[in-house]
Length: 221
Image (tube, rainbow, N blue to C red; front, top):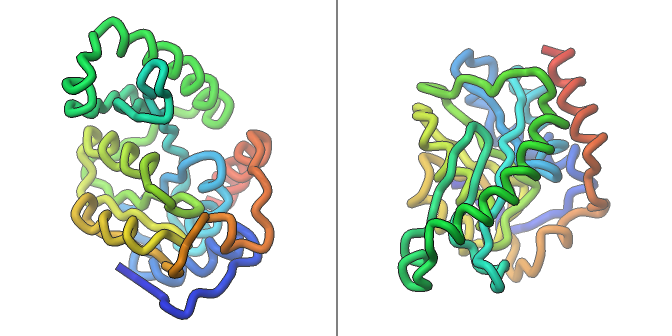
């Protein structure tokens, strides 16, 4: 885990990606490495990391499965590659039925498929078995989306999962040490408050930007 107590701010996501790439230099130009970015905000970061390391970039789309009526509470998640992960404790404690879970999953699956088609087009999902996968987002607050992504990614049998983010809450970064093979957090400011506070420019990344960055990365490869 990398931690910079003297936290600095990033100009934007591309700048953050450049800083993060320096912390990931040992993975450069390795044929077994792939960068998977969480859309949308993780893609500009991931694009810079993949370019600097000379490795492929793709997206890993994750959709949270919220409990009906209490959508902020996650009962699981679905992710790229047809993976569904459930929080068995939540499901059991709330007595959620398979029908209720399937209803939510089908709705989120439609949005996941929309994004997959929009971002990936006709490109097949990448082969991840025995690969070192670097999962990237623009930051971690609670880490719920990244946690779901890491759990879902294990179903693809990678050799190693590395979570890498420009900034994170210290306690969230610490918690991931037990959940993935490696966690890289460029800065872990205290107090943290929110991801966007550590960027000078933190506007929402559009679907069009995601598509353009993925196309640019593929062209550079």
